[in-house]
Length: 274
Image (cartoon, rainbow, N blue to C red; front, top):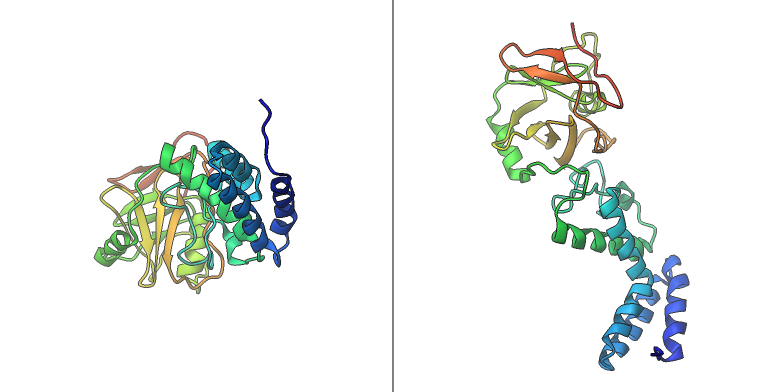
């Protein structure tokens, strides 16, 4: 059976593609697609309407987002400065929030927001993105309560942060970022020091939370990388990007707070303070 459709369907869908890449005319891309889809729906040609939507720039971007979700490489569009509360992972899909959204290009809504729709749809149906952080994701208010209850400053080393006498191994880039953002006058004459601005604690779900009166950072205790930040930071650099890497090489003896060697990761070896 031959599929029949008005020739102007093809014309409008073809015009939608160049309009989608030109920021000045990107809104016309949406108009062209809506005209085709709505007309097909009014004609009760639902399959044709779905085909037209899928062949449009919005549909292709949505399908691309779904494909990247299953590949574990998707990102979520989020406006704002990535150095503040837009950094980290999306709580629903667990895909990284895109830092590129802090610099709009005029037509990013066509591609990035359509791709985000695909990612969120897949996350709603299948759960967190494969390969991403799948642990507890506390609310920012819960993380703030943990910091408000802390009474002692944290201590950072080259490979860990010590909170309440217990050492938690971190990736080296995480420690460097914490020192830069929470202790800007640090000279690092000693590899282990007390950070007078940094507090820390654990949530009921075992998530490590560090921060000060203005900002909070939630860290995956297995990877040693931050997955969510909230507040205002004194540094311009965003936190290290969460990636699905192996757990840190060091394990913790909770009684003595001594670091001792464990298994070898694929990417790097954390240093051990003597």
